[in-house]
Amino acid sequence: MKKHLWAICAAAVLIAFTAYISLDTFVISTSYAEATDINTEMFSALSDGSESTLPSESAAQYNSSQIQDGSDSDSSSAKHGPGSGKSRASIGSSGNSFGNSDNDTSGIDASASYTGDNAVSTDNYTITLTEYYQNNTNIYVADVTLNSAQYLKTAFANDTYGKNVTEKTSEIAQANNAILAINGDYYGVQESGYVIRNGIVYRDTAKDSDVLCIYANGTMEIVSDSEYTADELVSMGVWQAFTFGPSLVENSTVTVGVNDEVGKAMASNPRTAIGIIDANHFVFVVSDGRTSESEGLSLYELATFMQGLGVKTAYNLDGGGSSTMYFNDSVVNNPTTGGSIKERGVSDIVYIG
Image (cartoon, rainbow, N blue to C red; front, side, top):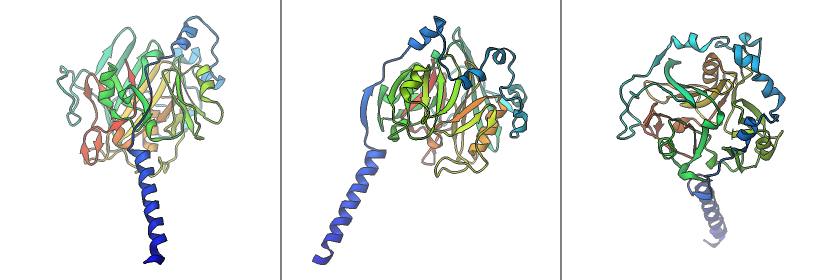
């Protein structure tokens, strides 16, 4: 027995250490800071007519002539991918607008089909929802036009920046009076990757990855975190930054291959993504998956679908059980968790409000 004692003790220590690491990574929640600050100085600089420090590549992509005439930033984009060159209207023939009956705000039922109004228009933003069926999958698209990027906001679960602090997308949305929301990049289960939200840097540790940057001037760009620090990005006018990925579309060209995937994720998955058509003209996209009604999308299928919407840039956010779209006090899609139609808790949301 004695000769096996060290082996038994070593195995016990290894098991305990592995259990602790797993719990610390995926279960144990740690709060680092309340997330109530918003950096509005970058919008003041825009209104004052201050010179933008936006990187030249992104500035060129959204120059005033392109915004006025809607021309593509890449004149050769028609060569790339099956969705190239299609306008949103040409794809719309395969889409169905949601019903226009009154919303039921008595509660949120993730298993119920959305039956509320499919459009909202205010002085600050216009949102239109359309449902598509493509690749054996229900896909939900929110077309969003803003008069300022300050209405594209983010929020943390429990209004707290931390590790494994989670709430359902609909709960975070309701707490922040969001009219439209999608899940974010689930930053709370990662140890690295920039977290810039509402102009505030919460995490400045790079992880050698593509970063989605949404600027205060309403443009979007994907950069490498090896090129800029988080503070430099904010000084350049970055309002929101996400580090899930990968990039789906850049310069109107699909940037993922047919077999590309996120880690060990299945090829057909529920998905969440965000894209931009012109300055302050965004699309939020969520797909169902893992059900008999909806198979789910591969990254390539998601990218080509978004290219067909006319986006210049698109980026993949957290998918799978996290994928949720909320609009007008209702969950629009059918989120799947553990084989059931129900929401999963997430770290953060992107919302309009």
